[in-house]
Length: 268
Image (tube, rainbow, N blue to C red; front, side, top):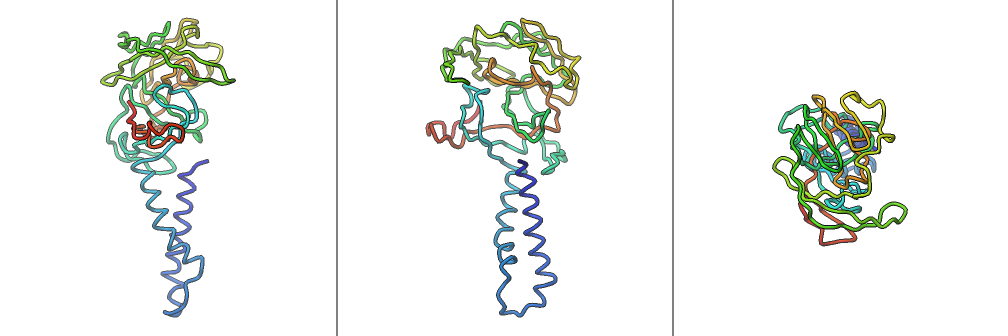
């Protein structure tokens, strides 16, 4: 569901009714006459819809985390806030950038429209920038020939799909200036080549084998991976994220019904 489009239509409808009444029908009504119910509703809701539309289109937009692909950074049920202007001002609905402000950096947690179905919003971590050579072999991430610094951090346990109990190993990983926690399952392969989409754009930029993959990120695109490396459907499988699909940078958990202690946590 495209909530931005729904808001835009509601904004046009309420604003149009209010304007038409002010310019046409309202001039024919007696000064002491009661407002028609439709006009009354339009005048009441238009300012509220306008405020919400501007806020979520240009400043901050809320999202809910539906899966465990970003564990342990983000948990299922986290409600997060996404900065909509850090990567540039975009027109609502069509998502066309009109003002350049900044670019995604390695290590940013970013919300974007899923390339295969732009009606879906995904959240992953930026691993590769345009022009980068990204390698992930034997559970070790390498960017432009340099291994990403990582240090063992501990263990993380959770219940996966099918009520399977997952015992993950966590590592402190540093991408650019940012340090975050990533998780792997030692017995799982780095990539499952048979699950890779064979025809995503710039598929020829990637090579796969049982040990992992190598991808060269094309200009205007980004390579995304989940922090829960072995339980994430990400760029390894469906390809690169184009700049026009970017929604914004996730920066804070603002609510979690099951764990109040997560409220207010900033996202590394």
